[in-house]
Length: 102
Image 1 (cartoon, rainbow, N blue to C red):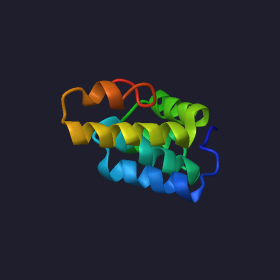
Image 2: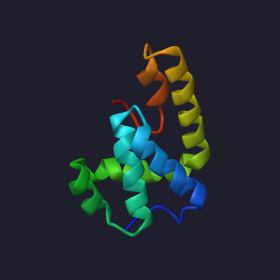
Image 3: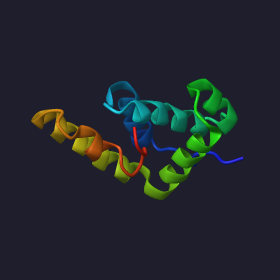
Image 4: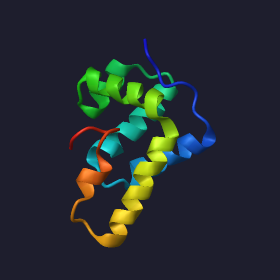
């Protein structure tokens, strides 16, 4: 079974912050899913918990391994910049490529 590789404290903090405050619903589901995977919870269990397909969870884990925290930081920086400007094009900037379409 595939799991998120061990996370560092900064990664765990970032994922908690995303779960708490990200504008994208998908990001708010993905972040705790990655934390659960890190804790050894199976993808089928995570998928049932968030009522998503197991392939969605698998894709989140794959993208985490490919993009990691640096991409998450970029997404969070975009989020803060967009919040400062307004909500006009927020989804176009926040969702690709880590979280997919809303």
